[in-house]
Length: 381
Image 1 (tube, rainbow, N blue to C red):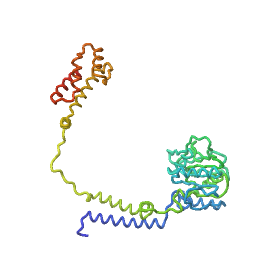
Image 2: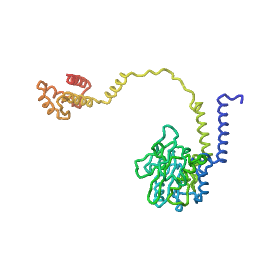
Image 3: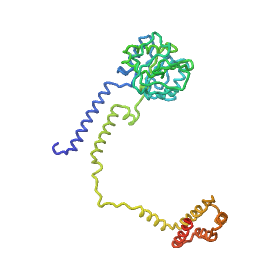
Image 4: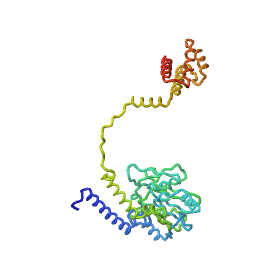
C-alpha cells in the first residue's frame, strides 16, 4: 500500500465502501420488504394494514386473492383503491363494468400516480398553497353511525371537476375533498383524505368515524377487496431477462448503483481519457472576408457564371417593376413594354439588350464582370 499513489488508494477505498454499502442494502431489503403508501400489507405508519384488520373486525368479508390480471373479483361488493399506481384506461374500463353491475369503488389518493384515475372520472387535483387544511362535513349523509369530528382529517389537495352530478361529502373552503356519484347500479367515492386511512391516522380521534361513514355509503354491504394489484402485488410475475433482473431485484439495482458510482469516480479521475495535449501553435481565426473570398473562388472554379447572371437578371426586373407591381416572371419584351408605359423616359432598347445578354450561357469571366457592373447601375439608378 505504501507504493500506491493517492488516487489509487482513493479508488480502492471507494470500491470497498461501495461493496459494503451494497451488501448491507441487499440484506436489509431481504429482511424488511418495502410497501407503497397505503398498502393494506404495510404495518408502517403510512400503510393501511390496520384498516384491513379493522374491516374484518366489522364483520366484512375481505377477499385477499392475488390477481394475474386486473379484474375486480365478481363476489366483491366494495373495492378500496388507495393511492393506486397509474391504472391504465383498459383497467379502468373493466373497473367501470364492475361498478355498473352494482359495485362500490372507494378511491382515495393525493399523489400524481392517481391522476389517471381521477381524469377517467373527469376530476383533477388542486394543491393547497397554505399546506395542510382541515375539511368540514357538507352533507347529512355523514351521520352514520355518528357525525365524525374532522379536526384530525388533514388534507393537502382538493378536487376539481366540471361535472354537476356529484355530491360533496366533505370540503375545504368550498373545494371538495370527498365526493360521491352514481354510475349504473353502483357508486363511486373519490377523496384526497389519505392520512385518515393510514395506520397512524386511524389512531387519531374522529378518523375512524370518518372512514366508517365513507364505508357506510357502499351500495351493498358485502365482500371487500383491497387493490394491491396497482401496488405491484401480481400473481405469475416473473423476472424475464437481465434487463428486468437489474431493474426489479435488490441485487440488480445494487449492481446498477455500483456501476454508476464507479463510472463517476473514473470520470472524475479522467484517467481513461488521457491527459490534455497542448496545441503545437496558436490557431488564428479566419476573418469574414476570407470566408467570402473562399466561397467566390469555389463558385469561379465551378463555372457558376450563368447562375450569377440570372440572379442579376431577376434583380433588375424585381427592382424596376417593384413600384408598378410588375411581375418579374413576365417575358422580357412584354415586361419592358409595360414598364415603358409607366415610365416614358425609360431607355427601352438598352434595357432589353441588357436583359438579353444576361441570359447568355457562353459568357466569359470578363464579360460577366462588365455585365454585373452595368446591371448594378440599372439597379441603383
